[in-house]
Image (cartoon, rainbow over the protein chains, first blue to last red):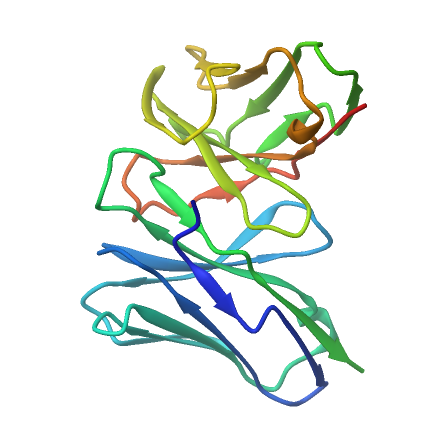
Length: 113
Length: 114
């Protein structure tokens, strides 16, 4: 089962624009993480936000977390062609001992030069 | 330092066969996790091992098994392969089992079952 659900499924923007992706989840969490994946290869960890944090920044990335709505957003500012990739949110799972980390289906981002 | 390595890169098998995938974690990392990623979907957690013990298991049939060796490398075994097992298998290593530990992913093994 997938806990995280990203929205939109696909996003196409011009270089220099901002890109916003959203993630919703179902159960209580300790933290939420965002990953990037280029061309179906290994994932790269971008940022982790704890359940008691509301916002976190890392370079051109800004992540927000709303635990009351069980949602998070990833904002990439001043996008570049190199940002073209799939982006996934992942949560830990406090509900059961199974499925320790749950990824969403991802948002495919295309940045057009 | 080398990152997480996986072998082989690609693999083609036929239904009913057995496959073994291998993973070497980053030096100093004691936890290894395995994920299955079907095309167009997010990775799905299969196993986590820490200090050679299973510390987590996803919703996969018993055809899937894994183990971790004293040097912290790991193997994922899949028996009686089905067409639906075709996927990218990702290995990730981390310092410990806590979800706060950053996971470092390998490039994956692309398994095709014919």
